[in-house]
Amino acid sequence: MTGPGEGKIPLKAAVYLAYGGPRRPLPCAVYLHVKGYSLARVTHVDVEAEELNRVLVPGESCYAT
View (spheres, helix red, strand yellow):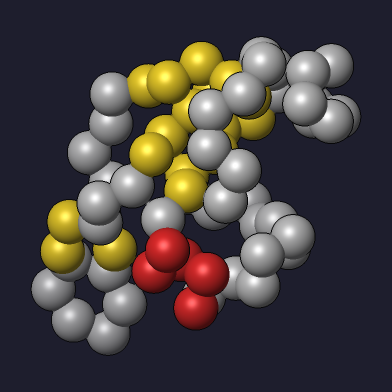
């Protein structure tokens, strides 16, 4: 998790985690990370939460829907 930075626009979002059971809210920070800023190679959405570090190792990336 890198938090706020140049080219990262904070978004208001409700994020839920669902895996093998009912979905539950995931407290997190969500940013639109603009290409060309803070090492972004493409414009993408960052979802940052400590709990996600158990799913994805920091530094890894994935495409999710």
